[in-house]
Image (cartoon, rainbow, N blue to C red; front, top):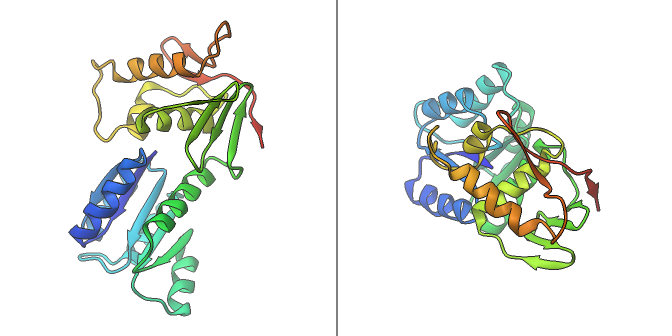
Amino acid sequence: MRLLFVEDSERLQRYVGAALKKEGYAVDACVDGEEGLWLAETHDYDAIILDLMLPKLDGLTVLERLRASGKQTHVLLLTARDRVEDRVRGLLTGADDYLVKPFDLSELLARVHALCRRGYGAKARDLAFGDLVIDTVSKRVQVVGKLVELPPREYALLEYLALRSGEVVSRSEIEAHIYDDHVGAMSNVVDSAICSLRKKITPFGSKPLIQTRRGLGYVLDAKVKRK
């Protein structure tokens, strides 16, 4: 999942950004509202973490202009203001969630994860595809009841395909949502990751859940059973 983090505190940006990347998110970050608005309008993010007190353009102005442009990306507001009227104003302006500073990092991660899932219509904790079960909260994957260890990037790829199950997901979409940097048209990083993931989650003798649609992309081709 790709996130935009707009925060003028470089210390907080480094701290939170590192935690998000450790969780497997691809993160774009900037320190002012002007650049934040430009990035939000020109890129497809799964969620935006937006501070209210920003140079050049404040967070509420960024949010107002973003919604006026038609962008419906889920937004989590960060602010030191804890008055009820401030929270209400932010939510009425178009925010999806609100977190007051100082905050617990685990709470921020949980709220971001919930917003990302909501963007794909997923509310249940588990996604099940036959013998494959994905726990989207603990980020644990089981195949035929056995735990499968996946590095963060492979887990992120699997969850992204699972949330879009039945849809053909192009290589460029995977690059944009999963990788921090555009990997380039000549790179085989996506193909290699798909190949590795396919081997790990396919029970012996079974048809691979991740199918290749030549010239189009990949699809997790199984009916979703949500627990």
